Image 1 (cartoon, helix red, strand yellow):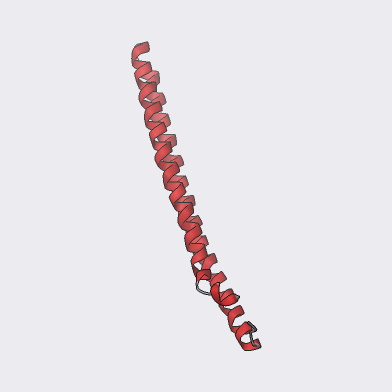
Image 2: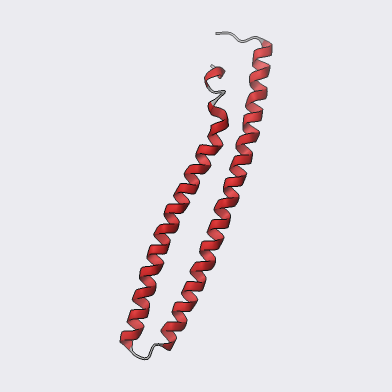
Length: 109
């Protein structure tokens, strides 16, 4: 199939518009990921500091072990939840960044 110059020009303009839409979506998603990572880091630091204070105040080895076990469990669960959330955010980023190109891809042949 051959394209006329006007069709190719229109397709090129659509491609550029799609690229700009994709970049805007990408930028918004990256900001959301950075904000989420910052919040997780802050919460993780605060939780670690609180656990260290509890550990320092423990009166017996058993109490210290309990504090450490509790912190390890909550830190692990928090990490898994955050990793799952990050995977979802990155998948959404890819989906949203590709979406503007879905409409023009079949016509570019």
